[in-house]
Image (cartoon, rainbow, N blue to C red; front, side):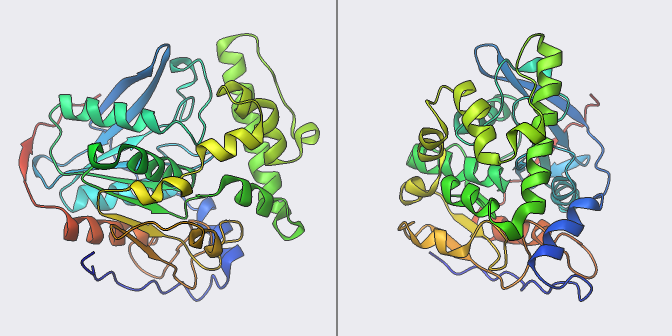
Length: 330
């Protein structure tokens, strides 16, 4: 594929190493992005997701669809940084909440999982019906990146996105779950387990009866997936869930320009997992030396480096077809 120049990532001097790059940016809020419109999109019988649209008055360069990671939402700091950059550069920013995320527990009867890539296609179809401007660029962060790559690979030439990107995607879910269990990653393990259990308890309360897990009983991400995520998604267990939901085996089917960005010092999405499959010539993979897991904190603006880098990439590989967009408040 044509080489696209992307500015190098230079980590902030006060955040050296993958662990600080991972932990600190997650605690710092991103810029506020006003929501011009909210769309509720049915993705399956009894299940809907909410998409928050940010837009400037006037002509739009295209529509950037953003998917968050595990335990995140449309308001996660990295989602805010990307949306703010997109709106500033003339794109419509469409931040998609996965099922039951971002206060949408009442919209869905099932939890989100890494294999729900069809949900993305239903959202793109809805954006098309609403006449949001093309091109459609889709970027996912962490688990959201796995969903984006899985759907792009499964749909191939029928993909409704014009270009896709993924930041630190866990393309091999089993390997990444195992990496989180390593002693050096116990802080992340506890963080994810606590957040997953809190999320499931909220969903259970809003929907009525249901399992209410506690971190001390679950202890690991894999055990959470074995007990809750897998059966809720129709899988027999965590092994079947990880095998079917991982995007790695689908990378070779991607027929749209695609960029995968994943730092070498990511504590649990290791660069080696991307060598297990042949992604084909449409997929570009970059491994910056630093950045941690979806941290990429740099000095200056944007503090979240991929916010501008993703747009640089998308603007280089998609045509410009500006169209006026009316701004409607939610």
